[in-house]
Image (tube, rainbow, N blue to C red; front, side):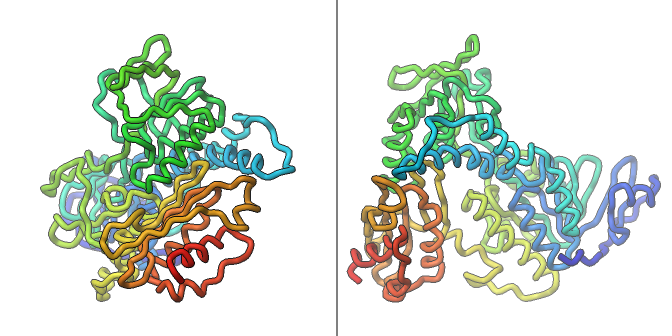
Length: 502
């Protein structure tokens, strides 16, 4: 990437009290960025300030820098964010060995061991998480032509962000990509019980003898299965009839069956009323009168936007609330067109890949507007995160996997569901006794796909075809001509369209 062009902007005149040349060299600032120090306060000017150096912020910042803007990327913890060190990457490193072992057992004639060895798995997980060292990520920030700024950021005025004793001013925009934090329920005794969040669940270096998991969402089921396969006795506590309540019912039922097959005890239709830790044991009291005793407790009851300490009150916004944005990423409640947001902090589509997509949109929008280019206000351009509304793909990496995009079921009278077993020649060869199911949702007026859900071993790689069909609004009669390879699991597309009537 070509380094961004320097661009200066006026800063109110101040009396300089510091060794300017030395400070510029120490902070590695471009001389074009005017600054001055007054009583220890350093002021610096950029075109764009991005708060949050995770994957969303990195994408927003990189696209703005690619457009020729001077960008400061502020991060208080690790560049690369939650996904790199405590979420997507390490969690999949823990899940993959168990999935691979189970898959090998389903292929006749393949000799496999009886159990997993946690040691090499932890070693691989640590490598995937870069041993929690973000030096490589920070080097990427610098190499991309951006300025990394370490510390907690607070918005202290219009286009102004304060990080410790540094005041950063943005000529064009401030972008909030601060992500989300775990949502902890108000349970008596929970704080004193020292529970795990997703961070401890993905970074622990030893297998607990007993693990209780509170919450049946994606984190809850993935970590329940990962640790059960690593040797822990796991209890999963869920409020409803089945885990994964946001997905099709058959998906939650299949995952629950998979968890039970791995020895997980699934406590359904119950909640925790209190938690206590005594002599190393955690006790969880349930509404149905039962008690779960474990060595560790993972609380996986959702996440909320990380907006508590950003200084939103200075803009008349409520700390802790999501930042509502339009499809260009512009925060609706802040006048002047300078505050943007992307990713979990907006509450729109709290998934890493979807946040990165929104970050790319925001970066392109800011660069275009800064250059005086007209940004079209219409969907499906690179200046609008249109897919957030109708084509959000998601995968739950359990065994069986769940892959979904768009609607999980019919919501309108014109919608029709088609649901069949994933029973084709490809699945028969993929695993002995393969069990899977697929549902598509069709808009019968337009004759296009509006949703798809796949459940079964290794279905994650199948969802992108459905995503393309939804985004492209491919007519079913044309989709019928996309001939699936034989023998592969994608044969199910032909069976689905035949079931629909084509």
